[in-house]
Image 1 (cartoon, rainbow, N blue to C red):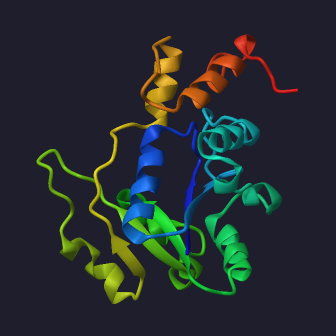
Image 2: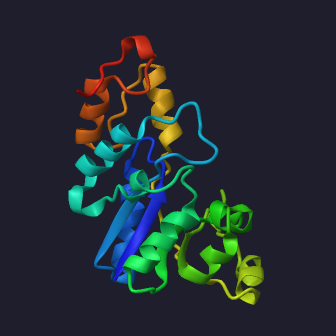
Length: 203
């Protein structure tokens, strides 16, 4: 079985990679396919262009573990549109979908949440509190009562964010240990997340 990991990956970091590794290990999936969002409806000014984000995921994980499906679909890149396409391509079987705790609890604010409820198996990555505890089972009762298909995986993951990497770069700090060596070299080569005047462009 395959599981999908959506995100802007702006840029991809070791935290993303570790989550995918642990989910694959625990659930026994054949592979985790990363899907960089092409043009999210609430686009951030800091969002790097799709080509660069896609290339970074590809060099971090290998071409076979990343999909450019959203590049081919209608914009803005609403998740439900991508899920409908994947659902049809997967013989109309529910799609395994990694999602963070915070985003899962906002799922009904997403576009067409009923389509997502019907067509997704959510793999929820919980947020741990400072005391090491995670959100209790009662917090998920609402979703159980509405027949969402989900499983909460209590896994450890690296406390890294894409914004942390972008901030490090802006402050001219070393990002070693936050992403892979290959991604770091790509960022440095193309001067990503730096002022446009300092940028080099892919040709």
